[in-house]
Image (cartoon, rainbow, N blue to C red; front, side):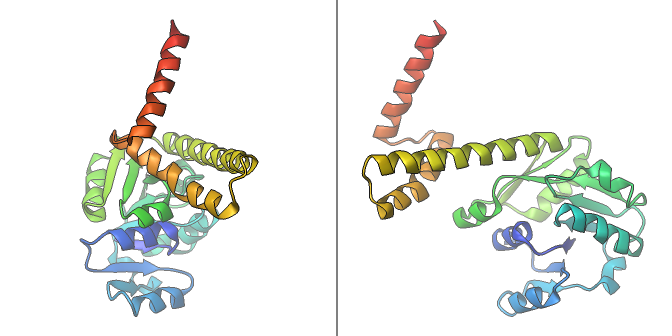
Length: 228
């Protein structure tokens, strides 16, 4: 697998994937990869001269960079190379015209790369259901920290977008309410940096503390009353 790009998504995979002994990385700025390779011997900067040896590519670049990468290098890969495309704001169909000899397969990350690294929990990649073999292959390569599930590109885009919007709204509103309550800035920042994420994880795992359980029961009771 060739990793094309060395941004947050690829760095998340490298940090959490303990199964792979080597990561072959192409990046416009080779120095960045080479510098990190001094600390992590698994990292190997890979120039375009070796592209002909790869039949699978993990394309982790911004939309415009995806097009420029394929326009410049797609002819160097063997026919029918599988290219996993990760950019949330770019559809696979848009890229297929640029690389008609290859398989462009969406593999979108549902989540937040930096947060996944902080929590050391990995996350979920979404691949359309018609690519069963490729999905299974990606799942094996990513390792135990990650999960690959079936879904569409639009699902991931909508979910990520809505989650970001609602989280920013929550952070702003919560900060404003705490300030009005006279809570000092250091305490506000401490609370906002930990409690929302902690409560969300506990909610997903069904492991709320006593106070959060009371709040949830009250909200569910109010919801039940409204539906009557």
